[in-house]
Image (cartoon, rainbow, N blue to C red; front, side, top):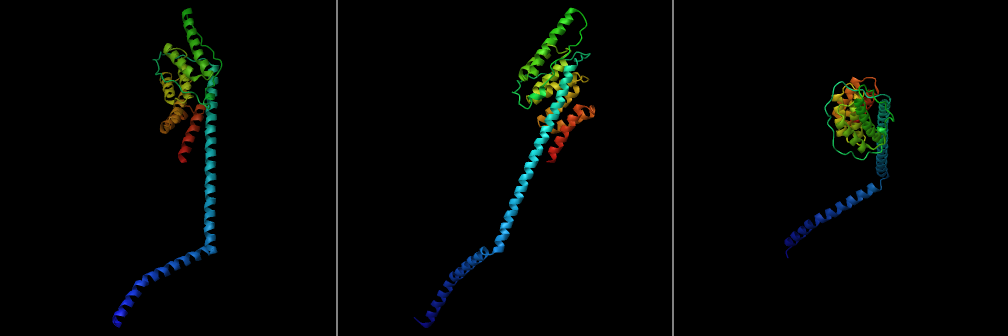
Length: 277
């Protein structure tokens, strides 16, 4: 082999070995850099501080969430208590005065045929009603008195079931009563309590039908304000918040300063607070 050829082979070998040597050097440098970082106390301390800060922020967020949940439950409880208080007052009025007959004979109200579901435990208190009612005065012959007595008896049977918390039976009995006495003196009350028997079992659509029928046929009756309030609460129960706000706002406007208006205003505030969250 000539000297020239030997020199060429040696140069090629050196060129081929250069990348491997460069790679070994580069890998060694990287390992050394990582070891330097791992042995740097300040960097480790900064990392630990960041982790500690994030954990503290997470605990704060959890505490805020728990506080909001607690306040929401308190708001719900206050709303339920206010509703039950209002409904108790309405029920006491039911027990202290006789229903007022209207001058016109209404058509039969739209009555639902759905059987109410079993009542929830939180709803039973809202249907606690008065134990006594005064019968209306009846003028005329014995036949009229007999018919009024039958109507009163039928109404009492349904009303007693409602007081006992037997809402499905009460709904069926009030439905039968309204079919038998669509223009009777107790028809407005029966419509209201039929709606109530549906409402407390969360059959909000059927309940709203009865309250709507009462307002359409007896707009000046003593139970009209409560029926309008209950329509708004039914919409709220169905998740129809715009309709609920509109109806509850109407209660506040039409009956200012009354218990129904205050309850409607409280529910309106709850709806608005829910939107802010």
